[in-house]
Length: 460
Image (cartoon, rainbow, N blue to C red; front, side, top):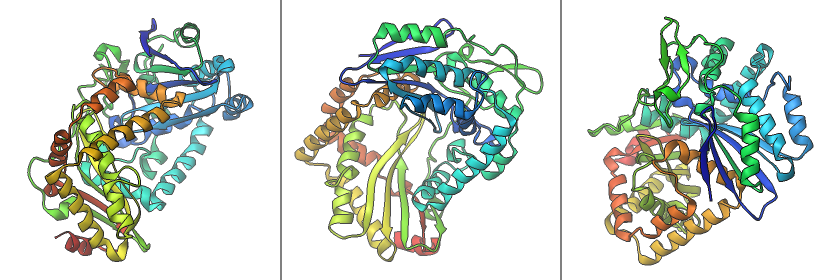
């Protein structure tokens, strides 16, 4: 289904043509995210993402970029997370060359106009406020700070109002030039385009940029944020720090996070932001697993049974039987060396204690007694069905392979992952639940009308 190759400048090309569609997605994914930033330039990855759409030498303004894409009905966007940043253009296959042209132009030749940077400070500041004003979103930021503390994983991807205001054009440009090199890029193309055509367009638009910046940029952000990703230190661009010494972004240098081995007092595991709102927004979490942990297959089944869909245990017990919530689901995220398992819910504040008790009971029940054969079988077909629907989207296919390229020990196709999920046993699911749902290691973030003292009393 997919093929991986390297361009002469070190860029990774992933081709995954698919039938049954007239669209093509051209996506570039970089192992560049907020966890690799210093505190001084927190939010730099996200800020740079915004600036990629603000003008290049060939297309001087944001309107030049957007009008070309809008004129052909393309779908285009970008995203920044803690571990990676991505850009994509989904376009009519007959016009796929335009997607290659514009993406390469943005990624290699953005101008970082000072006026655009000034305007974008205000845009990002409003984006930060938008998340902070929405309690269902803000509670996730509170949860990250509760779990990760001072580790970069605990920071908001967008940074803070202060860092966004103070970061300079030189700092942003240095970050961009040192991170956005071909060796740090995976170009994934999926949809209605022959493999040979993709390779020719990739060579035309992406292969001529040198593997290192043509000039040495000066780093202005204090100690440089280390990067992760495929390859050795020599795969990463040279970096000149203020001292004049040459260095490299190195995947071994980023700040690792480990869950505390000992038991922390409950008051240190619970964070509450009291607001005058009717609903209590809650994220409950437990120590999860690293990206490549083999337990991920059993975990997929576990979370499906527990909190995925309207027939899941938490949905039935918390919402359907007791009317304690409108929204509740289980999920999680994995990083290179760690991860979290989470339960997100919007709960009736007047019955918050009851809701938390029911959730705790369901976690204990699945850890103590496991799941039935029917639950096991239904979860597997659920995962298979959702994956089949997802893989009809060329954007999802491109991101699937690009993310695995950077983070997986070995790239697996959807079919290969489903084969491993199919082999998961009920005993493995129970084992995963017993490993994850240790109440003494539980972390809890709440935004709602109750004080921390009130919520601590509900948990005892």
